[in-house]
Length: 271
View: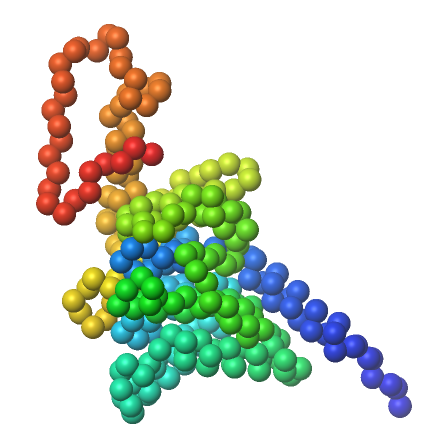
């Protein structure tokens, strides 16, 4: 009778962790950024059918990277858990912290089990509160660890490069549109150069505390994203070529007409 091949528990866990990290790194990054009125979720996702960002409950959203079938199973389980708890007790009893703990137990059990491969996913669970100090974002890794993130966080793909870009430019109190432009620029940044991500390749959603509805989750459409992302470019083109704001000696000296701004619309901002 042959002896079974022995692998130390430390080596087995290391191999499973390396396997999961490689699978997660193959996906495209997802970034979550806090802004003045809520939480912003941005991902580069050309697919119109498969969502990386979804609503879980009234004030709770879910974002993930990795294998779609694996994190979709967890998303559905989270929706069912939230609905059951809210129906059985009270809607206020459904919290992002409770949902994150439930996900952590599931991911930890799967990772430590020797009968199946670990999930190749990482998850964000975000909950918007009545004020910025009440907002919460939890990050769950493939092995069930839970980390509470502040200001911003990135997972999947070139997470380190995107995180460095945000760390150098992020400031608390940003508006939604400012946070969106910063995050999209960060996702397009890499060591080889910057690229512009088309609005059609973006998946963007917010948890907006200013909404009067009970449900605070809202997706931004491609048309809205195109308007918001093109606004800085249009402002830069109006300044002409060369240095921004430099006057063209051959241009007439008449003062250009000031463009009208509809109520509620932010004026163009130079890039």
